[in-house]
Length: 450
Image (cartoon, rainbow, N blue to C red; front, side, top):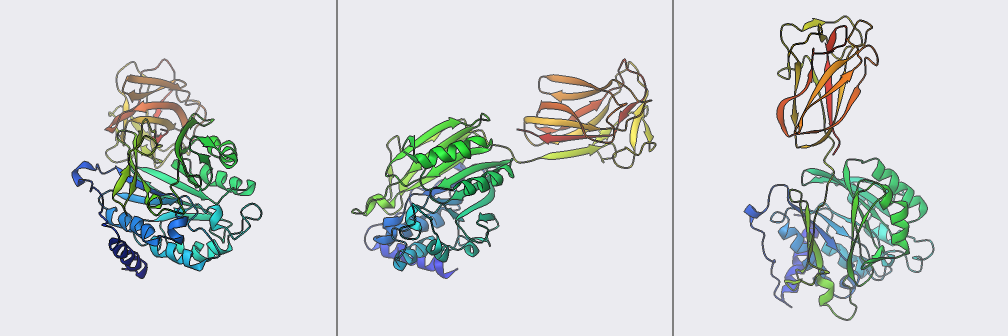
């Protein structure tokens, strides 16, 4: 156990001297499907770091205690970790609560205006103190660590992880991102097209209204990238959700919450528990105080978002005519090594004939969805100019005719098709054609699209 974890635990014990700290209702193990998971959002902790560190420690101790029961994968801190960046004690309090990101549940921070060096939030946005206390080197040991901008600082960063059967990308950006920082973020998101993307930043929206930063980020980043699914922010003492479609038609849920209070301890103790159920395509959001063992149950703080369509992970498979147990053809199909355009060691051929004698490729489809089917064959003037490829879909077989006298020696797309989950014959090459010349069966590639 690391010293930071011990310190955090001691903080929670001290908190117990002031108020009874209960762990909150445990989630029964049998109620959690394997793919259900939780992400915790930490709103502004600036006054907890300044005045009530026991509240902050109780929050993170609860996360550590609930990691297994709730399958907590990540903590997202939306910034303003501290109130006064020139006060060492506040940084120390925050770090004793947060621990190292490798301690229990990994975390990522979108630095807020209070985390910047004094007097620079509206000018240079300098992060000397933030990088001193939360340096890039603290996060690089995380298996989920992706990179930062600038390359040597922790101002803006991205992490990737897998949960709920899909891949996730979290991009954390500091207060009021510049054009250069937004350009960097666009490049990161575009480089991860099969990751469900989350933006974490400090100032984006006030309840259900975007501020200037939010409008800038929406127009120049979030709405442009088809794989964004969520944004999380704080800054304003409010709570709200904005749901919009990006220019590519993807729905983005923009979620804001902040409970900071400089004169009262208890409002600063709340965090967001966000439980994803990919099977039912829902996100259950609850607002909970581990310090008080109580929930906020009003509509702005306890709700369920439905119809969340997540991007499945990248998946592709190739089945060759030589792949063991995956290709079947009758004795009427010969074997040839004649063409150098072949995929693998050889390929199969047959005379065209009005008989039901297809060669079949067996493909193990992981889940029902949309897949691109591509085929590889050798091209020759003596091969068939209307070879029928059969694709097995839930609504019946679909046939695509391909001229095998052209475009040989590369992947040729038959199109995108709905394929059912299961390990069975999915693609066939038929001999039943009005075309002339040998029908070729070499290899097929199936790639998940959505």
